[in-house]
Image 1 (spheres, helix red, strand yellow):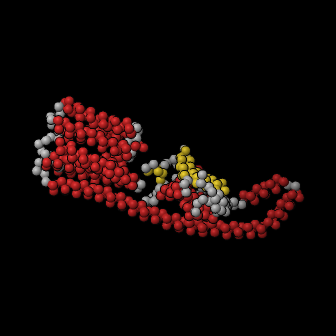
Image 2 (spheres, helix red, strand yellow):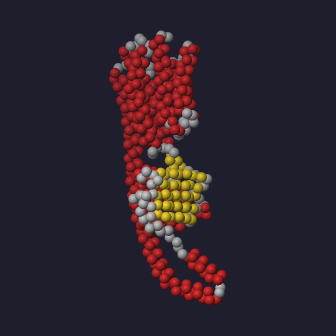
Image 3 (cartoon, helix red, strand yellow):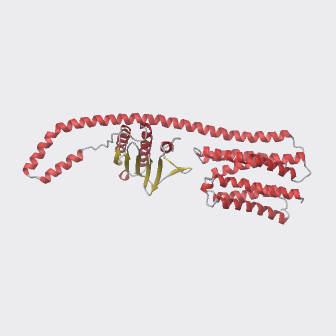
Length: 429
């Protein structure tokens, strides 16, 4: 083995370790081991494997490239244990890196065979080094952008489909390109690059498709929200009319109540008087009215909805006519939190259904807490809570609440404790 061959082996080992580090950097916030420690381990594994190969003088019947593939698969198995991400999401990052690395290998092998077939590794190392130096940072940024944008809507099935696209490219090139023939033409290299950009185009098309679907889902959610606002306002007006009718009826019945209580007082029957007053109090339908039209519309709508679902709902409200939020934004926050709380009641027994709403607000600040019981089952995706509704719009409600909070410099806090789910909003600290 000459010095050029040794240099090529050491360089490819360093390149393999460097590309493997990308996955750990990409998911550095979701690892079981410190990322910096894993970077060291990856380089140690890669160079140790190369050292063993050199010390043993190679392995009969296996090329160094095949040996590197086995080492790469081992490093992938290790990453499956370290990275706490869904399998296909993690595998997609691995497959993307393989597509990138395969393209580097194709180009470097082509340059080696085309321009210096006799020198074992010199042109290969130089070509691969130049490509990595120029393209590494853009490639990593592009991968990060893909993962972030697809993570908003992707599931395991979609990640799996993206893996199929990537691995198809890799396996086709393994069959067609390696080893690179000495008489390889530039047309062959161009065809491989066309395949590579075809894969990139599929990624871009997938992202665009997901964004279109999400925009459509958001538009549908906005239409549904507008419809609910109209229904809430109608419910509010109906309740106000009913209250006015109740006031008129109460005034009409007031003289009868006075007569009855006067009679009980004259007879000295205080126990009966107390029972009469308690019965009258139980008949009253106390409606929480804050004076804020948007908040009252939402609250009265969901109070009626809670009654229809046999859900006990308690309120402790002190919201002024004006709050830091515009009326539409207040409807988004309060409406989505109450809708999710009510939705959770469908999965538990009627006797356990319970929602509590606490709100404090004035022109400068608003605090809101919506607590509800649930069955203990939480659905999450990429660290975000999702509702259990059918359809593509699940998860949009809380994301809309979060967007409103960020708009006003506030915070949304979500917490589950046993069978109680708690959502809190603070704006205007």
